[in-house]
Image (cartoon, rainbow, N blue to C red):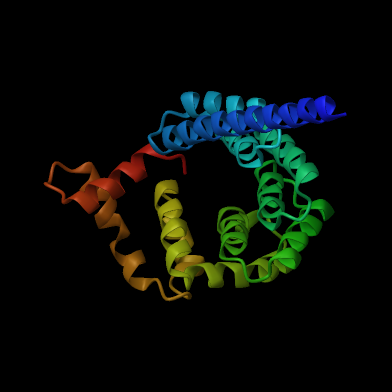
Length: 230
């Protein structure tokens, strides 16, 4: 029995080591995917994210990123499939429910499933800035396709995001990259107190396209405008 116990201990130790190595490899691939996405190399990012999710099937963040990258490259169904897979592993993950709502929006499905999924995200984490940011993104991007009831339901998330300092910058950067800031400002920006940003964003974008000397912060902002998908 003592010998059997030693073998069991060694076997357990080996499993822990292998599991740790797989987790490390998955994390490294995910980091490569994340950095490549920020640098605008979407093909490399997609390959690395897929490897991260393959090495460790429970790597939900990698699977989700793989889906987002598939969507950016013209496969919105890939995004939907990725998030449904993730939620089978983590049904209490409010952020992933919000991302599934956005996935449905990408394929123009604003039916009962969209309402149920968005409501589930909000129910699980009603005060989460990250969840509100995703729902806010859905509202400004797809406002013209949403029903009036859906717009009213999502509007508090947009307001919450605009007044949250960290999330506000991500939201406004996304609006700027889309070059749809005029429509955003007319419908939401001025009403939510972003008058200064709305009145200067054209000049900021023009400066990126000019040959004027920029400081380090301005260079980083211009690089984000050019590298990331809208």
